[in-house]
View (spheres, rainbow, N blue to C red):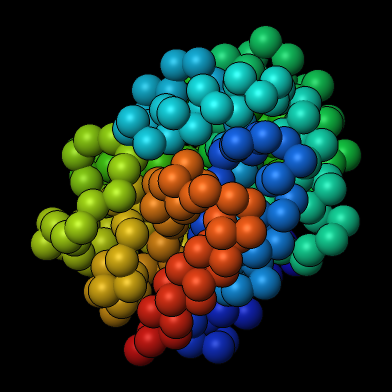
Length: 269
């Protein structure tokens, strides 16, 4: 199912989307499909699959360490794209690749999107690619039918937001706070204000999903109630993967936590 159809279906069912991030190859590539299955079978609507990179500038310590674990286990960009294909063969869920621009540049734009398309990827997020430099990227992604998800931050001006929306398909990734990724205990009131601020510019054009710092059910409830179409949870899942003493323990914790988070998305008014 595509991103567009997924958001349409959830809207009809009056639910927000639970978008779950994991790092491809963390702690090792053969476990990624098992983790993906635990997420999807317990409520994840969209899977965001990270491509490990040695200099992840938008990520906090939790995901930085996941990058290192994945790289140490031998995970390459091509392995992550192959994992996407393996997951899609088993699970009917949109898969979005999150990567920095360096691996795409090194592979070559056309080759990257050729391989991503072949491996059934639905969309790509590149946090360090500004829209002002994304003309060729956008053109080639559109030619391959892949969604281009750009990010908007609390410091984004309205003029720039409108430019970002023109380059964005699938959903707009709204960064909830100043800073890097990482689970927070409390939701900042400014996050709700940001959602309400940009809704007049996105409504009817593109769904918005809020990420960075989201880890609790009450975060999700407040964000969906404010009008967002989805939430992105990453570091909290990565922490479970890091801290679990066995594979079975990890999968059971992921299943339970995912179910709790999904329930919080089912309160859209």
